[in-house]
Structure formats: C-alpha cells, structure tokens
Length: 288
Length: 214
Image (cartoon, rainbow over all chains, first blue to last red; front, side, top):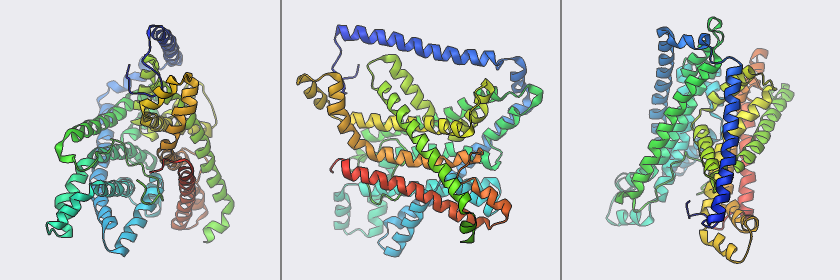
C-alpha cells in the first residue's frame, strides 16, 4: 500500500484482513455486473454469426480502414494547423503592443468559451464549406486558442532570472524569446501540448455529426445494414477499442514525455506541467 | 436582431435545455466522480482497479462515440428512456472521469502530516476525513472542477446533434423558417457565452471565498 496519503495509516494485520474481505466482496459485485452485461449481450443475440459476418468481407474492412484514414487525416491537419495558430496567438498575447495583445486576448477567450461543435456547424452550415475543411477549421480554432494559452503559461512560468539574465547580456527582445524563454517553455509544456492533441484526436469524431466520412461514419453505415441483422453492438465493440486505444497511446506518450522532462536538467528553471489538457477557465483572466 | 426577437421563445427553450443538461449532467458527474475518486484512494485493491479502469477508459473515449453508443446502443437491450436522460447519462459518465481526477489530485495535495496529526489526536476515520482532509482538499479543487463543468456545458452541444432540445439545435428550425443563418448562430454563440461565463463567474466567486490563499 502507498504511504503517501493523509487518509489512513499503514494498515495492521486486523485491518489488512478486513480490507481483504472488502476486496473479495467488491470483486464479487464487479464480476456480477460484468456477468450481467455479458448475459444481456448474449440474451439479445449480439454474438450470432449473422451480426459478425460482415467483418469478414474485404469491402467492409476496407471501408472501416478508409474511415480510420479519414479520421487520422483530419487529426493531422487539425494538429499542425492548431499548433501554428496557437503559436501566432501566443505571440499576440505576449506582445508588448497593447492593441495586438487585446485583439489576441479577445480571439483566444472567445474561441475557448465556445463549444467546438458550434464552430464546426457554423462553418459547415453558414459558410457552406465541405465537411473536412469545416471540421479542421473548428478544431483548429478551438485547440489553437487553448494551445495559445498553454504556450503563454509556459513562457510566463520560466523563472524570472532567465529573462533578466538574457536582457542583461544585451539580448534583443526577440532573441530573449527565441533563444531563452521559448525553448524552456516548450520543454515544460510538451506533456500538456500532447494531451491537448489527444483532445483534438477525440474531437475529430465530431465530424460524424456533419457527415464527414470518418471512422464512426463508416461504423454507422455498417450498423444500419439489414442484411447483417443490424449489427450495431458488434460495430461499437470493434470501433471503440480502436478509438480508445489510439487516444490511450497518445496519452501514455504524454505521460512518458512528462516523466522524461522532469528528470531532464534542461527544465531546471521551469516547472514541467502535468500531462493534462489545457484546463483554464475561460474568462478567468491571468489565473495561474 | 430580428432573429432573436422573433424567436425569443425558441431560443429560451433551447437555452433552458442546455442549462438543464448542464445542471443534471453536473450533478451526476459530481456524484459519480466523488464515488470513483473514493474508489481510487481506497485501501481495497479491486475498487482501486475498477476506479482506474473507469477513469482511463472514459478519459480516452471520444464523447461522440459515447453518445453514439448510449443513444443508439442501449435501446437494443430494451432500455428505452427519453433522449434527454440518455444525454445526461453520457455527459455525466464522461465528465465524472475528469471530476474524479480533479478530486483525487485535490486529496493528494493534503500533506500526510495532517492526517497523521488528526489520528494522533484520537480522531476517527470519519472525523479525520470530514474535519481535516476534505475541507483542505475542497479548497484546492475549486478551479479544476470549475473548468471541468464548463467543458461539460460546452459538450452538451453534442446532445443537440442527437435531437435533444438544446441551444445548438435551434439553428435547424430557424434555417427552415428562412432566417439568416449567420445571425441565428451569433445568438446561439451569445447563449453559450452566457452559460459558460456564468459558471466561470460562480467558480471565481467560490474560489475567492474558499480558495487557497496564494
């Protein structure tokens, strides 16, 4: 048992026996729930051959793979573009020119407070754009704004001495940024940036709602097929592990990077952020 | 401006739908998140595993996929509920994973010495928890819970696309009535800003009242 909690002492023999009893009881209850779910699945005939046969066909496998490819394509565009937009907006927010700073702040705060789906629908319905550009635009505006905040927090969290030392060496404002502050900030914020990309990857599934032919869309097409007895549950059982697996892989990568950066001597002057997506409240101003 | 004035009742209905989804979803998420957080810090191994699996899976599930599975999947098992309830269920379960992590992080910020001191004064487990650990955890947990609930309010827009009455869904009716799409979206945006900025203001107030003095 971990000792790093304020909740309870290290258990003695009696408490350990009690915990073991609770453990057995909890396991029984959890297994019961799992068994009940399995019973429901079997009872409603989700494992019949008819419902699983479509996945043996090459055409359907290709359709799923094409959907997955479209999902990854949207993610790649959105990731690159939102990193770029985040960089530009962060420059704006860190600028010494007041009008520029205000403009960037308004843009960032607005798009952070707006649901991604509203932006996607706006671009798709009102501006009558194709699904892929609409999806990418929406994702870019939202994630770019969040990433701008992440970049800004990173730059501001570099120890003050670093900036002062750089200025006292006679470096120009831009040099201080590019040679001293940004490299350290990026290292510290890399876990958060990757976690934000996980958010972008998850949100590519919103493309389903504007009929972009991505992974979920392919699944829906298969699920609605009467020839195979409407294999909805099998489709969910195939699609979700792939989606969740992709996101988990990226989250795990963020965790790994965070651990690595914390050990690195290059991040001594800045605290490495936890591997969580940017979660600042909109309208909260310069909250830490 | 006409778009708003002519369809005030439609917008009001949509805004009310969003607020309802947000409030009920938040309640479910807070309760479930609290339960899962207590599982994750429990001394019982199997509960810890269950909590960890719950959080890891839900945090990495796209919300659209969850909506898709809940709204269209649960009826296959003969579970037929109103769409609003399904939406609250999906939103609440999804957000509970994030709430759980926020609460757990909050509990972990309480120094071990606090609990040790409480126990050495002869306090029982419940007294230690209720009188010493949780009040301190609560203070540091306000901002992350606030931003999680704001995310929930924004995510409720997905429910609109699954034909639940909600703010984003109003654009369809307005579009059919022939109003300017751009203006109807402007007012939808204003509605969402009202909701998110209200939650933000509430949590800023809470933070000012109870937050950790920095």
